[in-house]
Length: 295
Image 1 (tube, helix red, strand yellow):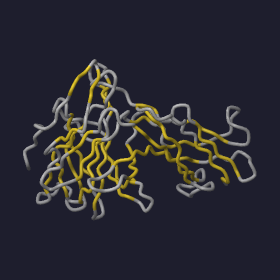
Image 2 (spheres, rainbow, N blue to C red; image 1 turned 45 degrees about the horizontal axis):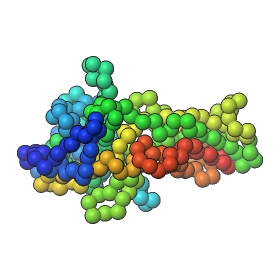
Image 3 (cartoon, rainbow, N blue to C red; image 1 turned 45 degrees about the vertical axis):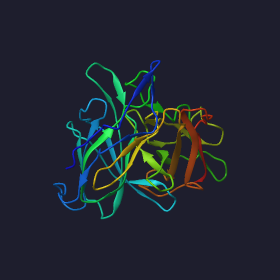
Image 4 (tube, one colour; image 1 turned 135 degrees about the horizontal axis):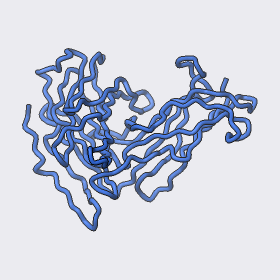
C-alpha cells in the first residue's frame, strides 16, 4: 500500500469559523488491485478514518452506487463500518461503483460529530481501498455538528384520479450533486442518519389536505457539500469544497402500491422536490411531494 500523506492539506480558523478553500488531501485512499479483499472477487473493501484525529470511524454508512440512465446514482449495496473503521461489500457484479460514505456519531462525552459525505468515484470490483478520509462538516460549533433534516416541515400527499385519498408507500432519497474528475456532475444518493424515515406510508387524517392521504417524513444528512475523489490505483486525491459554496439537496420520492412489495403507483410514480439549502444564499423550498392518480 502507498503511504498516505496530508502534507498539502491546510486548515484556517478565523473568528470561530472554519474557512475552507479548495483543499486537496493528497495520497488518501490508495488502493491495491493485486491483493483482493478476503471475500474474493466481486467485493470492495476499505477503512474509514477521521481526517482531523486520524482515528477510525465506526458505524459510518457506506453505499455502493451506480449511475442509471437518468444520471442518478442508485444504491446497489449498503453496509456500515466496524469499530476499527473497516468495511467490506461483497457479491457485487463486475463493474465500477461510486463509494459514498457519511457518518454522524456521538462520543462518550455526548458530543455529536457529523462528517461531510466522502465520495470515491469509479472504484472497480476486487479493490481494497486503503484509508478513506471523513472530514467533520462545516458546523458552527466546530469540529462538532448535528445533521440537518431536509424533510423538516414537509408533507407527502397521495390522491386517486378522482381526487379521493389513496394510501401509498413512499420511498424517499436525499440527492446531492457532485462531479467525478473531468466529468459532468451527477446526482448521488446521500446516506441518511438515525431518526430519518426514508420509507413512509400515507394515511387519511384530519391534518391532511382535502382529498388526499398524507404523511410527514425526516431525512437527516450532513449540512455540507461532499468531499470527492476519483479512484486511482496509485492513490486517490480527495478535494474539499469551499465553505462559501451553496449546499443544496433534492428529495426524491417513489410511490408504491401499499403492501405490494414493489409495484409502482401514482402518475408519475417518481417526483423530486427542492432545493433544500442547509447553507448558502439560495431560497430553501419545503420539500413537499404531491402524488396524484394513485390506485
